[in-house]
Image 1: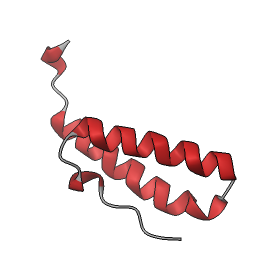
Image 2 (image 1 turned 120 degrees about the vertical axis):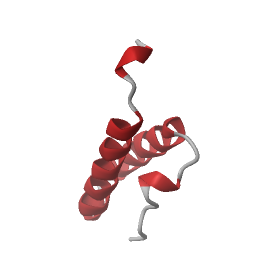
Image 3 (image 1 turned 60 degrees about the horizontal axis):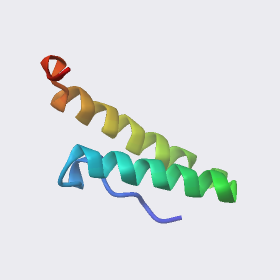
Image 4 (image 1 turned 90 degrees about the vertical axis):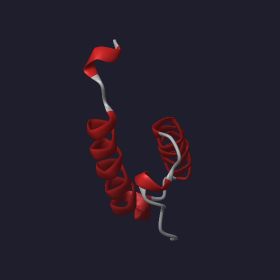
Length: 59
């Protein structure tokens, strides 16, 4: 299993979310449970980045 990039390495938040979504879909499709810890690490970083970049006044 290779290591996923950091959620902070992506240029935009949208790119990071798309990468995460596609990666989860691929892992679920293959039922490869060895990716669990790496996906959870990326998910935590992604949520940290969302919290930092989220602007509640944008809605």
